[in-house]
Amino acid sequence: MKNERGFVLAETIVVITVLCVILIMLYASYNNLLIGVKKKSFFDNTEYVYKTSVVRKYLEPKINISSLFQDKTYGVYCSNTLVAYDDCSSSSIDGYELFKFLRINAIYVTPWDANNAGVANYLDLEATTQSYIKYLDAEIMPSLVYRLIVMYEADDGHYEYASLRFGSRG
Image (cartoon, helix red, strand yellow):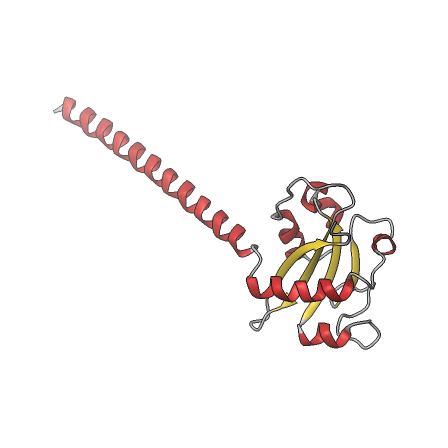
């Protein structure tokens, strides 16, 4: 009788251990799935890439990139959410009709490898913009290559992003 009690206890411990290992494996798989979905949500949508191309063609001849940066690692052409900058849909900004039509919330110019500069350099930007920059791929480009990042307001109220190479495209 005493032997059976010891066997039941050992069997229970083994079953609990196996269940814990299975639950940990399931949690790890689920967590990887969530990370993948989150990364995928930051990929550029074709519609917004096309809109960003239109914005790029409009802004490239008009912007002096070096004047945008003002001692920061990024430049802001306009933003509806950052207090110190012109509203993208106000008549005081050059291109406001286009920006209002495309529902642009902000336009940023960053170095091509913006995510390598670290998120700490972008702390005064919106959290969604910081997340977008964090997930950008930075292939090796020559120096003085910039990225145009455009923040759009989608129909459901959340923000969509797209980015393209900006400046001298030689």
